[in-house]
Amino acid sequence: MSSVSCCASRAPFSRLEDFESLAEKRLPSDVWEYYSFPSCSGFTLQENKRAFQRYRLLPRVLRDVSGVDTAATVLGSRLDMPVAISPTAHHSLAHPDGEKATAKGAASANTAFVVSSFANYSLEDIAQSAPQGVRWFYLIPQNDPARTEELLRRAESAGYTAIWLTVDLPRFGFQNRRDSRIESAEGKRFPNLTFDNAPSDVRSSEFSAYLNDSVKQPITWDDVVWLRKNTQLKIVLKGILSAEDAKEAVKVGVDGICVSNHGGRQLDGVPASIDALPDVVRAVAGKAEVYVDGGVRSGADVLKALALGARCVFVGRPVLWGLACDGAEGVHQVLQLLKEQLNLAMAQAGCSRVSDIKPSLVVHESYYLRGHHCSDSHPH
Image (cartoon, rainbow, N blue to C red; front, side, top):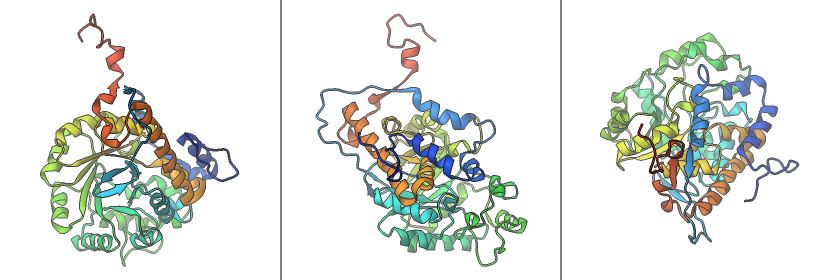
């Protein structure tokens, strides 16, 4: 497998952790902490990565994998790989071009980018930076329905083809945000979350109070029903971990579900996303697309997630690392590395196309550790 290089003067990067190390050196300490911090003890953040290690790949051999195609169709868009970019906030803290650079990097890799409501550039500016890119918008509903409708119309007009709702964030806590210690005012501009009456000083308590008063919190299933009635765009719910909620999502007519624990930044102690994925896939029973994010650090991780039923895998922090390293090119390199790793992992597992990736390709380590495959194994 070839490696990618972050900046011509540096050695080729063969792991996402290489981007992480360089990003940590380049970013101010307060920004690095903001991007990296977990909730409470950090148990869930660490579990997201540890959980992937508990799944074993069972490759099939003697298959013709002389050509491997990683292409996939997600929400009706043809992507070069089933890996896309999760919504994350404050990209201008990593690079001056912020989400505009991220959009360019995603488009150059021919994959999708979910733009956050906490983006530092407007929906329109981001769309103009990469007109041919696949873009979806993470919407935060407003207390005033007219403002929510305005955001929907803006997204539709700017060529966004899906709306994402983050459903595991019932309270935003604008009055006590961890990013309050970040000095950059530019990194706190929210042109997709503020309207004409917003206070001008984005670092003031008045601005935090404005956001707290204007954002609808919590959102409920009624808001999902309202959204379904008020847009023709596809709808994805991000943050579902239980089979019960997945079934309810199907009932209200969503197009996709992203199994996610918010990168370990919300309720600590919930399952790793990859562990929750199979139950959600079974509950949805093909009636909506299912994705997963959290802890993905290699193409082999992507392969495991696809085998467990995900249609697409999303990455957040690694994209920010690439952005901090080299702007749009750094984002492209992170995505290209994942694509190359996935291509190799598929070949080694005997899969020439994404449709060849079956559940039988992966097994939990307990199968071996508890002796389930042995005739004299003990019941438990």
